Length: 203
Image: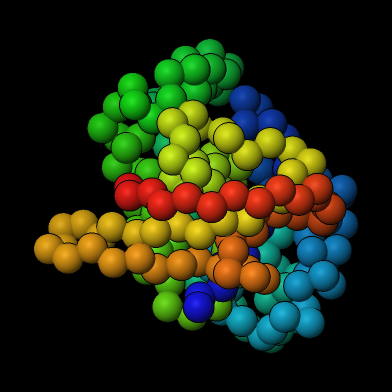
């Protein structure tokens, strides 16, 4: 049973409407170190990270503890945005998230599939440092939910993700697991309340 730890990056030094690739704030750095301390007894395991600075900097303390280097994975980067001014991003994101995946354009659907293909393709236990919407892609697929962000703050969710590979001719289920045959979604340096779900979903 493969265990995948999905970790959202710590607090960024700037909002995504103010900077294209901010690093961590002072609080975010503290969160990153707290996350490394919490995860340290579980490893060393493989680490993957979004190429964006806030994710890379969140991964860095755990890399140091485990004396390893994270694999940089574009598939778990932030939701792709069209070319636009930074101050236009909130209105665009609001429209996208209001519609859900059923009304998403081809670019967003392709990105969603890339996220799920990477996660369901992991053969060994791994810690993945990623972003809010990317983590929600995993949760939404597992729960069969159409909305972009079913995962809310102050929540920890356990579930199994069945897999349908594309364009393979045969379908099989790979369970991504943490703890008791489950996938845990966590935010860097924070504690979360727990709820349990189980579903069979095809992406």
